[in-house]
Image 1 (tube, rainbow, N blue to C red):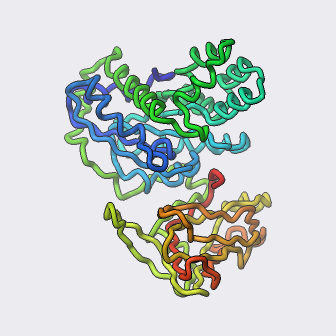
Image 2 (cartoon, rainbow, N blue to C red):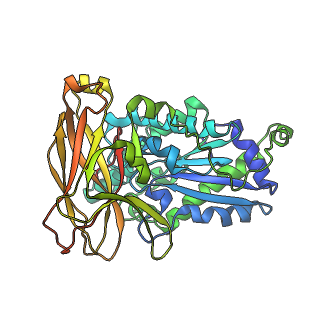
Length: 427
């Protein structure tokens, strides 16, 4: 059950149980979006709620991005969550995030909660902390090395351990409800770790996939069950239900978020950028041979906007303006491009810093042999902006240039988005 009580969760769940149209929006990483060809636990929410609350009239929306950190989610919440919901479920998991990034992650999560609540003061936010990746890796390492399993399990449950512990702390301090899988599974975790019958490995394998990150099918059912149990418990809790009916808005289904996006303090203070498609235009300083296009998926007809070049030598330059304080502290930053990889037509680009900043030149090849098309992250790491350029309108210029060399025999390169101003998981 949620570790912290939040009165705002009670009213939406009471209305949900009464059959009033209710929208639940999930926002998170690939655990929320679904990994590869596997489904997401969010697809199990509606039938699970129907089994527990027979009069439900619920719409479930799923938003996010595979590999998204809390900083990524905070920077992109204004555009990645178009749904204006009654209940927002925000999922985030640690995936090799260094402890040094935790303070920024804490600010990001708090900013997400603020931004979502600002859309509707009556909306509830529920945090979801899946089983920590760091804990799974620690336990499996100890299993391989015949280490101290009980000590490792106890470490996994420490308040200061992993992103899950940080989320639990935010929940307690901000009175935001949270479903934390490590807390829900604390008793069996300790029991299996203490067992001399070798049950910890099979138990862990029963809900976590072999990549240490994603839930398998039973794990997805577990996540759905825990979220649904939290909603059902909130609806059945004590409190004045009459006020929930007085606060009932005229309609809650199929609402879209206000066009005046709420970016939150995180994005404002960090100059965080999450730009896709047409949103890239203000960042472009100059371009030659690149054009904005909106392509369509052959199978789903979903629109896929981006900037496309088809000739070798085509260049596109972007302005990168990190926080002035970070430049003056001589910090290095990371600039990330989201680009399309596919098995047909694709070429490669050279990316690097050309004015006001320095970084190592990188080559991003958009051609892959697997018969899939996917958006991937290309990163310029350790970008250092000249201190005297701090505060300029365009202190750093980054260029992408289509190369002559190509594995496919063609040169198409499609830039989907640009992400800057926050820590992103290494791709």
